[in-house]
Image 1 (cartoon, rainbow, N blue to C red):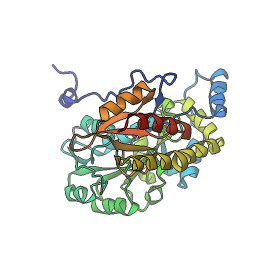
Image 2 (image 1 turned 180 degrees about the vertical axis):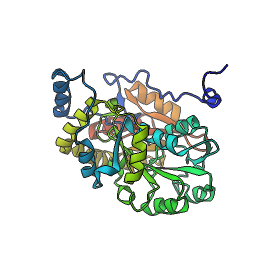
Image 3 (image 1 turned 90 degrees about the vertical axis):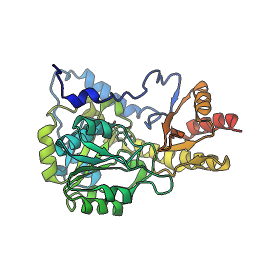
Image 4 (image 1 turned 120 degrees about the vertical axis):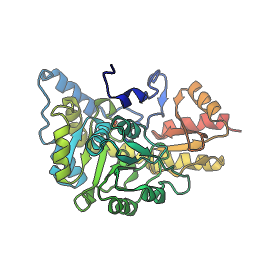
Length: 351
Ligand SMILES: Cc1ncc(COP(=O)(O)O)c(C=O)c1O
């Protein structure tokens, strides 16, 4: 007798390629992370908390939702913290789907949407992004029907780094009033486009965000959901009372106090590293997708050879196929000196 639901046996495991990611050996441009450690002050606050003898206590979150709400310019009742934004994404699928539900997940995209949809045995539609038009808005609008329960808007999308306008998201929210419009703003601070101010006006918009990327804390797993208060009240019934660990809260309290160190990193990536790298790609006539994030999807004639050369020079990047199966390299941008080192290696291998 099978122990689990039949469809679970048919699923695959999502296993990101984590092996060998040794920051002593490699510059890690493969996971869209912050490429340097967080400021010493933040690390010190975490260490001090550990040494203060509180590990034996259950988490208690204090005013963290107020602080996040303040950061987002929304009401605290519109905010729920989660164990990474992965949990926020999963909660949306869990709470919205039932057998026979349909979901729209434009691809290629972040694999966790498909995992969460598969756990709920939802039927998935995957219209494809294109280099020139980005999000396949017309196709998504055409797929919406009475069974549609979740429409994913990854903004910006991973791996394409393309963004979706607020107007397009509003069109979706109006076109599918009975579906959750799951707007994943994981890279919001790099991109600057957000719909958190629209969540009361459009109660089917659910935004997920994270402290994993710009804020440099993926190891501590802290994300959050912003939506209408009525939605947050329901989602809170499904999230566990201690799903977010206390160290994550300690780290975020400190990160908010040292926000200028985070902002300085964003500036360096977006104002210095990225324009230099784009100019480099243009000079070499390389094909890449327009990026609204801290990473760029680049298509070389021989992606495998370039990836190997970068690895040999101590730089990791992530291969990602487009809809036609053509292999691109998704390259995270870090500090200016890391980007210059990247360009130097690329210049030595390009014809
Ligand atoms: C688009 C997107 N959403 C969500 C996540 C997950 O982030 P978190 O660490 O908050 O779970 C990622 C991570 O790569 C991502 O690229």
